[in-house]
Image 1 (cartoon, rainbow, N blue to C red):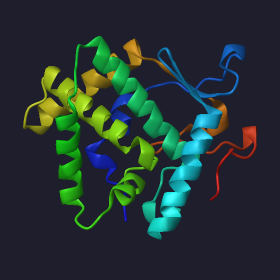
Image 2: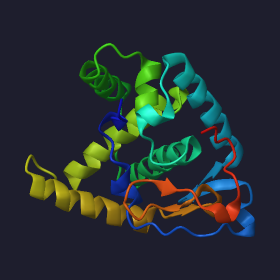
Image 3: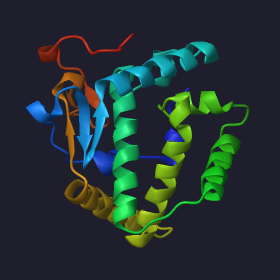
Image 4: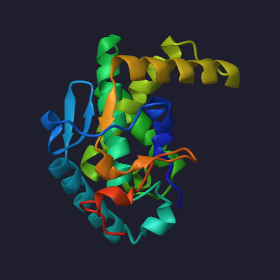
Length: 203
């Protein structure tokens, strides 16, 4: 099984964001996204929930082909959710419960036979945050449309680039180096031995 990420491309909003060390004011933070803080304890709790869902579904990390460890992959999802929520608010984007349920139903239809928990595992997010991920995806779609995305690939790529630039400028991201370094091959983070073992990792 490969991650579908419910039609979400994290690289769109993560592209070009520099990995920097935590300052003293960020102690205990896995990442600072705009004016929001993702704590290490919050990420660890998500990792435990996610790994329990993996075990229940009988899915291994190797099958999912995660871009790094479980905490690294979940951190990227949490960064995506926080960044899109803030960027959407700045651009006056609203999302209704009906829109969330519609996209969620579409994702379930595409992955026939999946439960919500299995869909969350495949999308690399803790089950309790699945609807938050879907909400961020709706915001992403609306922002893409606002930035000129049409049905053709060229306009979508141009909108992708504009969205990435806007996200980096308006909602900057600072990740703790404890969770790795940018993957030179693209997509997610890779573990750095300079900072010891990752908390919450079970791979």
